[in-house]
Length: 118
Length: 115
Image (cartoon, rainbow over all chains, first blue to last red; front, side, top):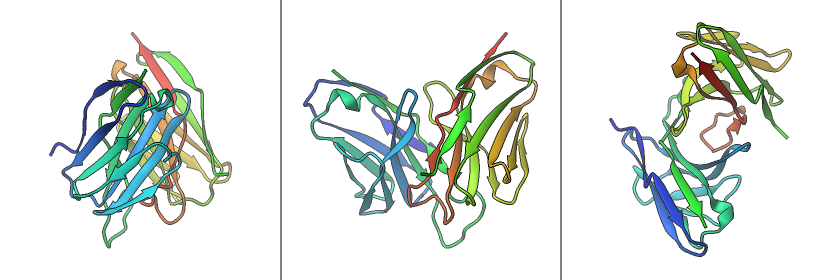
């Protein structure tokens, strides 16, 4: 199993350009998340999804859009990139089901995408 | 506002030495408390998980403790190795579980183990 994968690993954009980050998981997880990590800030939730076709806003959703057309994929879009969106972006997924047990909501993270907006 | 604060921000120790990282939280009770390890350039990986009623949990040379009275958790690393160099993040899940995107992340402690 590859776990959670992210594409691309690195990207440099100019202000105003758009791009899409792709996250894929092969663990059949229902829940998926997009975070950004900035120095001294810790991980902050951008958007999340509780299932195929559903998305919800997190703590810092402005400037981003997401889509979950397939259960295994979660896309993060930047329509008009700004320098403030320079960050490392992490995707994560977690199990969901009818059973709840310790660790059942553990989030598994991808390797990250380092984005620089000039 | 629910918070998770970690100390120290960074720590340098010599290989083979022990160290303890601290996590103070305000949300109480909680569903569970996790410690994640994040290697440079990688995503976080779960190390330990404790429910509100547990006092300690071990994973090899890593031991997490929980004091619900003082709202503190510690991560103790024994006989440190160069591969322990990483950031360690404390994460608290509020009651009801974390699947709705409501995890509370600390900012992490950056540990450097020197030979």
